[in-house]
Structure formats: C-alpha cells, structure tokens
Image 1 (tube, rainbow, N blue to C red):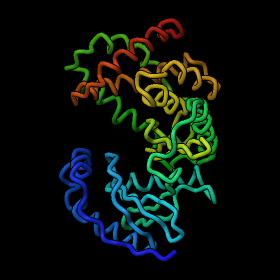
Image 2 (image 1 turned 45 degrees about the vertical axis):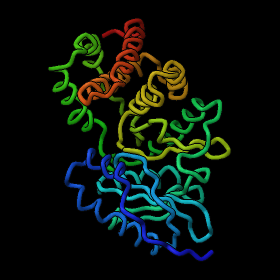
Image 3 (image 1 turned 90 degrees about the vertical axis):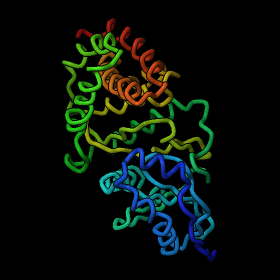
Amino acid sequence: MTTTCRALPPLPETCRSRLLAHYGSAATTWLNGVPGLLTNAGRRWNLNLTGYHDAGHASVLATAHDREGSPVLVKMWFDADRYARETAALRLWRPGQDRVLLAADDEHRVAVLRMIAGRPGGDKPPSDETARVAEAVQQAHGIGRNVRPGRFPPLADHIRNEIEPRIRERGRTSRYGRHIAQITPYLAGLSADAARRTVLHADLYRENVAFTRQGRPMLLDPLPMQGDALFDWAFWTLYYRLGNGTDDRLREAARRSGVARSSILPWCLLIGLHGLLYYEDTRDPRHQQMADVLTVLLSYAEKETTP
C-alpha cells in the first residue's frame, strides 16, 4: 500500500497545555516544532498520519497507518531520558514479532508503536482483568531479573531523592497529619530485597495497560527503574483503579509474587502517602479517595505487621 504523509496541523491546545504544565516553559520551543518533526518522521517511515491522539502528560501522540494499512501510533518525547528508558523497556519486554516498538529515531526522540487492537487504548478489558494484568506484570518481572544492574536508574535513588523529600516537605503543611503519624512507623523499617530486583514498570495505571482483541494485556508507557518488585505490586494495588478493587489486587499481588501481604503493605503505604500529599498539594479531588484507601490499608497493616 502506498502512503501519502500529509502535514500535521498545530498541536491541540489541550495537549500543549498538559505538556507545559508537566515540563514548564522549557518545552515551548520543542512543542512548536513537534508538528513538523512528526510530519518528517511520517514521511521517513512511509506512514499516513491521520491526526493527533490527545492524551498523556509527558509525550505527544499521533495516529497513522503504515504502508500495509495497519494502524500505528507515532510517539514523540520531550525528555530524552524518558524516551531512552521507555523504548529500552519496550524492547526488553516485547522483542521479535510480538514487539510493540516498531521503529525509533534516537536523534529526534520519536518512535512508531503498534496500535493494540487497532485503536488507541486497546480493546475492552476482559472480565478476569485483574488476574491477566497480574500475570503480565509477573512475566515482565521475570524478564527483568536477568538485566544487569545499572541499565536502568535504581529505585533506591528515586525513593531517596524524590519520594522521601517530597513527603517530608509536603507533610509539614498537610492536614493529613494523622495519616502521616500512623504510616511513618511502617516506613522506618522498609527495605528492598536484592533477590526481588527486576526492571519495574513503575507507572501501572489502568490507562497504561492495553488489551488485545484476545484479551492479552500489554504493558505500555513505563517509567522503568530497577529495584524491588514489590514497588510495582504496591503501585498497581493502589493506582490501577484508585478506590476500586484494591483488596482483589492486593490479594492477587501476593499470590503472583509469592510474597506475603504483610510485606507488600508497607510499600503500599509509602507510595500511597506520597500520592496523598501530592493530590492535596495540587488540589486534586482524589486526595480524599486516597486517604480512604490508606485508612483501610493501615487497618490491615496494624493486624499483619509489627512497626
């Protein structure tokens, strides 16, 4: 099939606003050039660009068809480190004919991705969604355990340099002092187990998992790091559907990982407290939902762990 790559129009203002909010004014010049860069990439890869997919906070997405007429996504990143980490993880988890990453241009930080189930976001999740996603996470962790240390940033640095300082800073003025006081003792003894070190997805929101027409989950849009697998299990437990199905995911996380629920809960409390204070600081209405989830998880931790 012969393709004719038309020039893309200016970015949707909603897309532009999200990326400026995420990266600040430093991204302005890059955003101005994105339509032209995407158009050039489409011509280079013989794609028929059909428009923008207005979603996400850290990259720009365009829809297209390749020379065979198959639908694809063209993704462009502002952050060079994020581009390098994400594309490396996708190559690691899905190599060969099953690959998600179809082509990449390191110089311009743009890549062609397979469009799962022929549409952005993939197909409708199956009824056994929780079990299937847990299986996919476990499979990714199994692959990631064979990766030498240092290929991706360490989770320990992320916790030490970002999560813990933000908790301390935001906690000074938070109205959730009771939650902070209750959770803090569980964090003091939190330590990573080197035997569980793997390549983490680290961003397991529901929108970052796309299902094929056969109901197979594909893990997309990672923020990969190397560290204890329990970070991923805890993040997934909390954020995949915040406030919905938390118990089911916690139970499945323990079953799939082979680690006791009592060992996963402190990681849930760390990640959840960080999220709670972020939501509060940014006036995100989800702060109350997160507070309610943490109250429940604290009740479990009080029964199952010793601070």
